[in-house]
Image 1 (cartoon, rainbow, N blue to C red):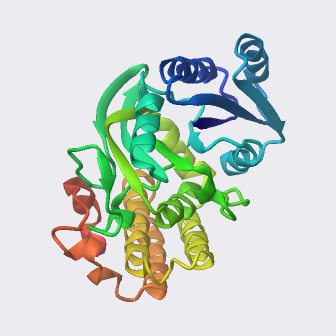
Image 2 (cartoon, rainbow, N blue to C red):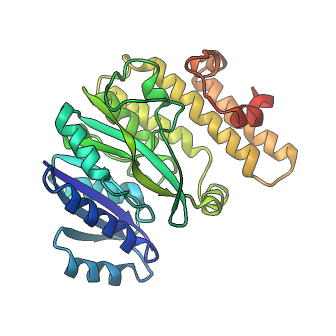
Length: 324
């Protein structure tokens, strides 16, 4: 088995060495089960990233580097997909890193189950210190092994983030990240990949360390993205499902994904935007009006009403209940 680890980086001089060397350590630990190759896409960095990458390339033969003008993480990931040929693909952001044995656990599960996609827990980290290990989306798994993606609204409730997941290359046939630079681009792709997979397996271990830069996340939301990008990502996801002939099969889950992720953006606006109540309410109304136009019955969606499927986050409900 060959695993390609694809790392897009933009101005990541502070973190990229830790990121790459965590993959090198993993490659050594899982060499009996898989060959690991690392592909870094330098997305037009203007800091010292390139010099660090060149130094690391001289040291590690598993490392291949490509450069492109700054085009965004989605474009960089697409270049990584098209430039590699391994059996499975893992994506890793430059400021994140892999725990010990992450790839060994993912590869072992893929070999044991012949799964098309394998996912595990991720830990939020402050500095170099993991805070917790979770499976996002309110899903609870206690045992590793094959799961049934058709049960329990799995597609709607599993996190659409690309982290802590390994995908068989064949799932990417005619499927890429959005070419346009948009926020929440993973949402346009990850549910489609999971919908295409015949077998999905879960590893009940942490396989990804995620750097929690809360101030950066808020800043990007306030100044670098359009909250209505969420609708662009969801439109692309729907188009991907239609192109794959999977939309009718997963229509209910898509409607729940639409509802849930638009409401997450409402929560962001309600919590993070520092403006007058009138302006905030006007923006939230425009978001919910667009949701209603796309899905008139969203308030009755199981993700909001069914106790077994609804979002299990009391703080989320507290923040948005006045808008429902």
